[in-house]
Amino acid sequence: MKIAIGCDEAAYRLKMVLYEHLLKKEGIEVKDFGADAGEIVLYPDVAHAVARAVADGEYDRGVLVCGTGIGMCITANKVPGIRAAVCHDPFSTERSRKSNDCQILCMGERVIGEELAKYLLDIWLGCDFAGGGSAPKVARINEIDKMYSK
Image 1 (tube, rainbow, N blue to C red):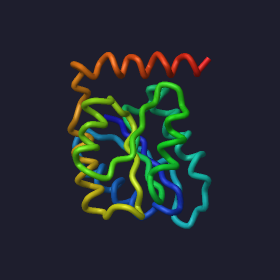
Image 2: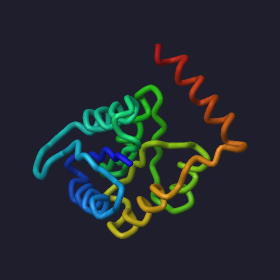
Image 3: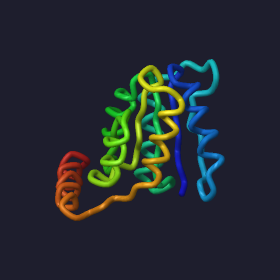
């Protein structure tokens, strides 16, 4: 699995924790889209780059972190074909994949700690889209997305 990861300056520390955590996993290739230590960036630029790489099929999934995860999530969801979710608890993390087929996980360094973030990342990586009753809902999301991506 290929993972794209990115952050703004508010979440550099957490991004690095998650990046190192991903590097230890067998079968996962990870690319860091920034920000670098001490670099001030506009989080929409990082979120757009990661979301575009996932939408274009260069990466299977993405991880975005900022102060709250909210700004990254809003921006990522502007990219046609992307479903991103802010997840700070196990149930929402699992459902973001199983029910909503989200390709991008967003978290906030100012909201959760490192151990919880790693735990949630592991849950998210271990889940696949369950389909079933959620399949027509995700299909409808995709139809709506296409209406506005022309």
